[in-house]
Length: 151
Image (cartoon, rainbow, N blue to C red; front, side):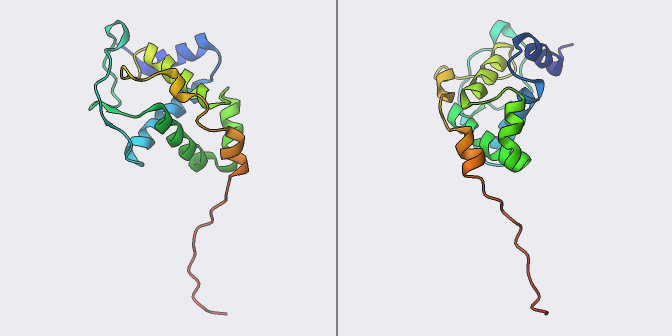
């Protein structure tokens, strides 16, 4: 039986650039993009390499572009890790949006993600700068509280 997590762990070990956590985070961010942000549209995918197993994620063929995924990753990273987002991503070997593309295309290569004929790894190049979006533009948002006027 095919075990996607085992295949991804093997990929992470063989490639060596990115930790397993980086691959899992990209999957989580993809789900976040589709479910929370409503990103994605119907688009025909290319066949999986080597006729591999059909992925369980994204069964209806909703497609997100590289730029859209990078934006979803930015929002998800800030939600999950706040001011530490850049540090966490860097600890996994991820330093630029191109790294997200490398991860995605590695996952495509082993049949865990799909792409359309228009998708290119260059779609992930220089979408944003980590220092700018995760540090320089970071804003702490405190929950709004209601005050009863006592005091």
